[in-house]
Every structure is written in C-alpha cells, then in structure tokens.
Amino acid sequence: MAVNWDAVQRELIPLKDYEDCCRRFLVSYSYPFVISAFNFTMPDLSGYSQKLLGGDSRERYTEYLSALNSHFSELHRVGVKDVLDLVAHTATRDKLESFVERSGVDPRNIVSVLKYLIYWFIPGEKYLSGLVRHNPSISAAIHVLGELEIRTNLQLLQLGLTPTGRKALAQSSGLPVGVIDELVNRADFSRMPWASKATISNIIGAGYGSLAQLANANPEQLYADFFNYGKSIGKNLKLGNEIENSYRISKIVPALVEED
Image (cartoon, rainbow, N blue to C red):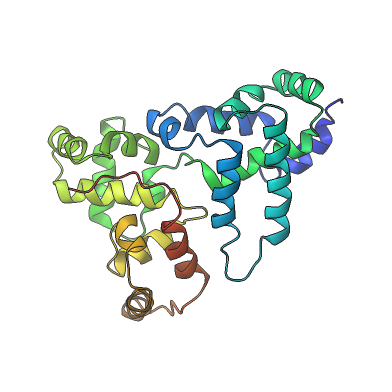
C-alpha cells in the first residue's frame, strides 16, 4: 500500500506537517520520565483511552474512541509492541512508508493514532511563561530559571519530580522552595489534555495547588471553591467543561510528582 501524503496531511491537521509530528515525539521522548511513564502497550493504551475519552459525561468522543480502538487493535495485530515501538516505526516519512508496506495498515489510521498521542497522551513541550496568567512573582521566577536554561515544562518536570530535586532547584536558583513547588505543579497540570494557562491558574487560584489535590478533592466542595474563586476575580466560572473535565482527567493521567 502506497502512502498518499496529501491524505496524511489532511489527517494531521492542525499539525503543520509530518515532520512536525515526528519532532514532537522526538522532543517529548528525549526525557527519561516520559519514556518511563508514557510507553503503553496497544491494549493498555486502549484501556487508558476508554477512561479518558469514554468517561466524558457528554459522550462527545464515542465515535472517535471506537475508531481509535480499532486502530490500536490493528497495530497490535501487526506486531507493534508499545508506543515507543510505534514511534520508531514511523519516525520519518521513509520509515512510515516501509512500515505501511510491510504491515498493510492504512497510513491514515496510523497518523490518526499519532495525532491522538500528541494531543491526548504524551506531555507536550510548553514554555513555562505560557503556564502563568497575571502573576508577576511567578513570572519573575520563570525568568530566573530561564537564566539557568530551564525554560519548558518538560525540563522542569524532569528536574523537579522529587522533593530532593525541587530542593536542589531552589538551591541552584536561589528561589524559595515554595515557588519551585508551584512552578513544578503548574508544569504538572500542563500535562492534562488542552489545559490552558487560564485553566491552570483558575484551579490553583481555587485552592488546588497540585494534580494530586485536584484528584483527591470532594467534587461538591471543588465546584463551590471554583465558582467562588471566579466571583473573587469578577468571572463567572460556573460548573462546566473546564473544571468537570480537569477533575475527571486528574484522576486518569499518570501520577508523576512525588509529594514531600
């Protein structure tokens, strides 16, 4: 089966092109914590996706999930062991073409899975400055870390997953441990699919400073705290997609940051 690259490009939207897709995997999987925590087998990826997409209260992803599960099963049948194995088989255009020729899998199905992994599964690289809204002290701390060549969420998570790592960061940067903790937790929140700096700032502002705190929250209290925080900043953060999905997804994504 030949690869129709025009059809692949349409499947990739909104990604720029296939090279952009491959680059994102290369960047994310250059970090040991990503390799360790985000290398599911195809059956495990199917189970994870069932929780992530199938648990949506409005059932918006039913057809999408069904298609993905079919793709996962097909990749498993042709011998793809896990996500890293899939990435290795598809790391360049030439490799994708060779894999398609050997396996007979429709390249559009493969690319659909790759795009899903980028937007819903693996932590993507984001600048720390893009995780903060209207917080001069945290923005100043981000500038300090930038002077140490620590500029992205993935860099910070790799260094700050453990209490020991966060204390070492505080010592090397001269920043208070509490500030490092907040920045690491902001980076951790950024792993949730579609988490914007507004969502991250709203959750922290409502009193839930880490993914673990959000995951373990009492839902009624969480919704009340979220709504009341919105009132305090002059916004109507009514119960809805933002906090419902954040709370649900916080219970699903792999736990990474070790608490003190």
